[in-house]
Every structure is written in C-alpha cells, then in structure tokens.
Length: 226
Image (cartoon, rainbow, N blue to C red; front, side, top):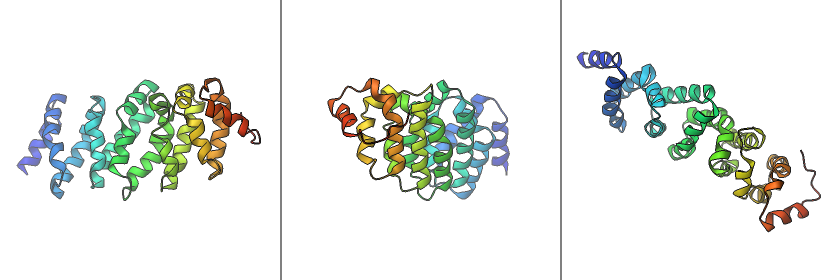
C-alpha cells in the first residue's frame, strides 16, 4: 500500500519525476508480475505514454508493443492513435522515421488483435504518405501478402494514399521499382492490378529503368486508370 501511494505521489509530480519513474519501471516489465503490470498500465494510462510521445522517446514506446499483456499495450496504442490522427505531416514523418512499422512487425500482430487493428485502421492508412517519403513504400509492399486481410487492405490504402496525397512522394516510389514489383503481383489480385494502374500514369515521368519502360509497352492491353 505504501509503495502504491509513493508511486501515485511521483506520478503527480513534475515531468522529471515521471521520467525517473519510467526509467525505473519500464525495464522491469519483461516477465513482470501481474501486480507490477497493473501498476505499469495505470501509470502509462495516466501520463507515462503521453510523456514518452511528447519526449519523442519512440524507441521505448514502440518496445511496449512486444509486451504480451494487453493492459500494457492499450495505453500505448491509445496515445499513438491520438498522436497520429492529430499530428501534422511533419510529426507523422517523425513517427515513421522512428520505425513504427518495423517495431509492430517485430512485436508480431499474431494473437494481438489490438495491435493488428491499430496497424490496419490507423498506422497504414494515415501514415501512407509518410511511408512514401521515408522509403518509397518499400516497408509497406510486403504487407500486400500479409495473412491478415485487414492489413492487406490497409497496405493497399497506404500505397494509394502515398500516390494521391500532396504529402506523398511518387518519385520515391518509382525509385524503389514499385512499378515492376506491383506488375509482378497484379495477375494474382485485382486490387493490386488496380493499384498498379492507378500508380503508372503518375510514375511515368520518373521512369528511368529500361525494364520498367518496357512494361509500358507490354501492358498496352490494360486500361490505365488516371
């Protein structure tokens, strides 16, 4: 009881007080007891998740995706969802540059429906333009084959938003050979074919690889959607 009251006092203190607390608390969560996980969940919900996001300490924040206790993940996901949805493109780019998607994939969404849903309805569709700026969408591309249909659909939406948004970067997408990579998959999936047809006219000014220019001639039978 005394320990709980002491933690509550620290949580009501200054940001520096809470920073000291989180540096002591969060590393203990691996194989932590149920009591400690509950304390951590309460602290994260009350302020620590927000503090981590405000400080830009995304490595520590994303590491919590790996925790098997949904009570730990819930405040982290809630804080990131709010931050992503409310942020401007510059702040969203920082989140992508901090490797949110690799962190999610490393944590593994299998058996973590909360994390899978967050990826499918927030991370991919909202951050699509930032992924195109960061790596041309190469980190998103493998998710077109993901076993979860929600994530496959969201990956398509992410790439499409990278094409359509004024914050997207079609030139970057072209540089990573997105045209040929989608072309190789499009006979397997009508959605991917439609995405390829949507990208091609916008990517055309940036095509420089002979093999991709040849694809234009090989694909004259397709209806290219503008």
